[in-house]
Image (tube, rainbow, N blue to C red; front, side, top):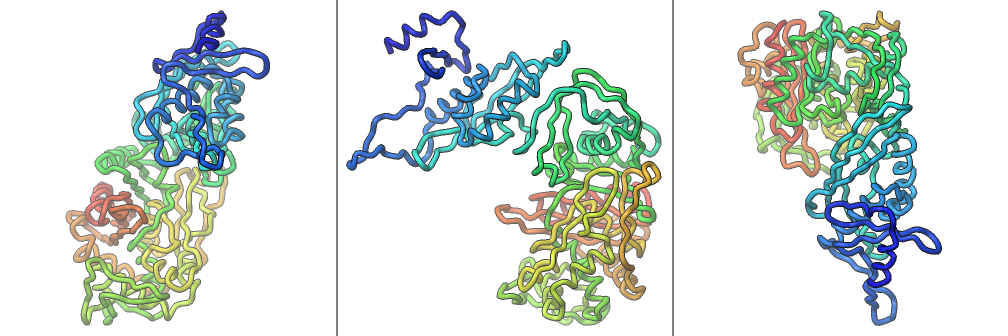
Length: 555
C-alpha cells in the first residue's frame, strides 16, 4: 500500500466519496485507473489449479463481491470515467454510449450516486444531479438499481448491464436526451371540456404521452425544453411512446379533446386502486367511444397495450364460431367431460368437474373447458383466427384509437395449441380494450372500433370488420352471456347490475405464477367493459367487481 499512499498524497483534487468508500484517481504513465479504499476491490487472488491455469471462481456472489463491484461502477460513473465504468459491466459496448450520452446528450452534470443496502445480488442507489441546457438548470433526483452477476468465462463479478441501470424508465436501446422537445405538449380534455392530468387521474400518464406523440404537432402547440426518454427500435416495436422525465421550460400546449367521461374515469381509477395489477376499460357500445381506462400500475397502459392470455373470456368468440358452424346450440345437449385429450395434451376443467347430459348454455355458464376443446377435431386450424378477425376486428393491427394500442392476436395454430386457443390460452393474446370490444360487438351485433379521439379531429379511418354474425348466432350468443350473468360464474359480480346484461368470466394460467390472471367482460345497455387482475385468481371475484362497478354507473 506504500506506493498507493504516495500517489494519493500527490493528488491535488479531492477524492470522490461514495457510500463511505473513497475512489482515488491514479495517474501515471499509460491509461488512467482508479482504486477503491475501504472495502477492497475485486482482484485476482493468485489461486491456480494443479495444471497452472488460473482457477475460475463459481457459485453465488459474496456480499463483498456485490458491494465492491457496485461501488466500483458507481464511483467511475460519478467521476465521469466512462471507459472504467463500462469495463465493470458485462456489456461494455452497450454501456459506454449510454453513459457517455448521460453527460453529452442528456446534459446531466454534478452527479452524486449513493448506494443503498444490497439485497442479494441487487444494489439500489439514489441519483442526484443537475440538468443544464443553454443557461437553464434544474435539479434531477431519482432512484435506480443494479444487479451484479458472475461472468462464466473467468468468474469475475460484473454489473449486469441494462439501460434501466442508468434510469428505470429506459428500455434497452433507448436514449436520454435534453433539448427542445421534438413534439409540443398537448392539453388533453375530457368529453366535457375538463383538463385531464396525472394529478386528477393517477394512471392517465401513458395516455397523455400517446396523445402528445400523435397530436402534439397537429394541435398547434410550441415545444419546450425537457429531459426525455427517446425510444429505440425495440421499444417502438412495442408501441411505447417517448417519455418526458423533467421539464426545464414549458412549451405552449395544443388542445386535444378525448371521449373520456370524467366521472367514470374517476370511478375507474378508484376501482383499480383496490386491486394490485388491475386494469379496466369502459366503452359506449353504439359508437365505440372509450369512456374510461385505468391501470393500477401507472407506468404502462395494460388496458390498451397489454398482451395477455384472456382465458375463458375468449369462449365468447369461440362460442360464436361453434354456433355458426352448427357444432353447438344454446339449448341442445353438449359434452362436458372431466378430461379431453387433443394433440397429445390432456385438458381438464377447473377442479375436474363434469356436466352430465348438460346443454351448451350450461357449459358456457359454468365455463367448461372440455366442452370447447372437444370440438377442436371438427375445426380447421385457421377457423378461430378468421372468426376473431372477420367478426370482431381483432388481430389485424389496424385500430386507430388516437394512442398506441395492441389490437389482440389470435394466431393460426395446430394440434394442442389450437385446442388451447379455443379457451383463451395457447398463443391468444388480448387486453381489456380488446375484450370490452368483444362484449360491445355481441351487444351491438356489429364491430365498432373503439376510439379515444374522434376521427373527425384528424380524418383518420377507423377499422371495420369484414362481416357480422348471422342473426341466429347472435341471438344465441346473447342468450349465453345473459344466462351467465344471471346464473353462471358471473352471477355474483353482476348482482345488482340491472337491465339488459351479459357477461363472461375467465382465468388464464401463466407459467411461473401461483395464481392465474382473472378476467371479466360484460355489457349493460349501451355500455361494455372488461378488466383483468394479474395474478389475482378467478375472474368472477377479482376483475368482476371492477367491471360491474363501472356498468352500474349507466346503461
